[in-house]
Amino acid sequence: MSTVNVNITNGPSIDVKWFSGMNTQQALEGAYNQQNLKEQFNFALQYYGSSLGYLVIMMDNLYEQNSPLIYYWEFYINGVASKTGIDNTILKEGDKVKFAYERYNTNHETTTVGVKHKSSIRD
Image 1 (cartoon, rainbow, N blue to C red):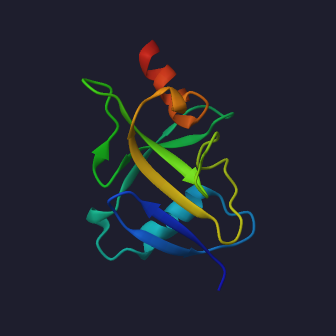
Image 2 (cartoon, rainbow, N blue to C red; image 1 turned 180 degrees about the vertical axis):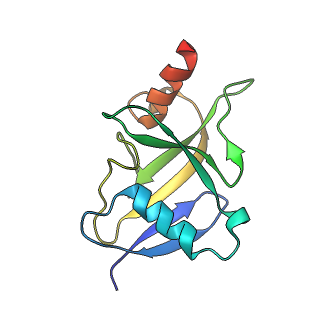
């Protein structure tokens, strides 16, 4: 069976059946559907417009925070931070998806976290 792996830092690591055209949101939903204890693996999304799409803002009841420290959920495909939302990121067989809760720094400027950060400082 062809799979992709969805890993949440300090949470589950789940192999999900892969299909052609699968996006990261579908993989995340597939991982959720495989869990017996839904309250231990949950997530929330926010829409950032058609060019970026949906981004994760909460996992395992841990929401992003903007003060006093700034933390966001970043997601990686095969160790590389994504530049597109989870619905706009198409996966290949065997890909490894990782969601990490990270403190904002300048390395995030060109990733989805950079977009979320710029959006939060305008509000």
